[in-house]
View 1: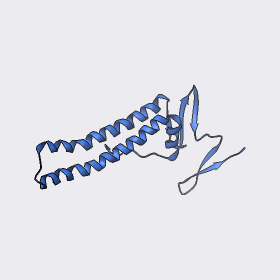
View 2: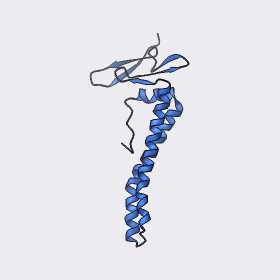
View 3: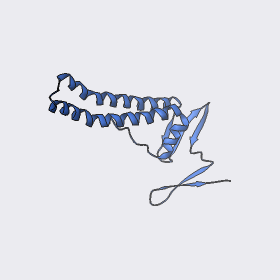
View 4: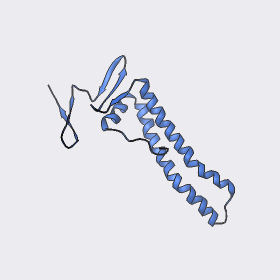
Length: 135
């Protein structure tokens, strides 16, 4: 998956990473954007090389242009990896069963969403319902 990073499991995972490490969240978004550009280049570069060939201005050094999308994809994947490594330094963990993100900040465990403010209830059709408790 060179150009497209794995999708978030849930909105809580995305917002948990954003709360845990905003810089990591920004890098993840940047990695997604760079991966998309690499995907467009993967289609565009061969078209450009064929165009130059048909316009009788082809040169063999243009074949190096075909490697540019892969370089861009590697940069995007590296940024995604760095973003998760930054979160790992704070012991970020996402629990798929409870759909909560946890990490350590200042020696205290942080949880998103906070169990005191929200309750996750599974309803029969598989959706998650967020209920606010003001008690």
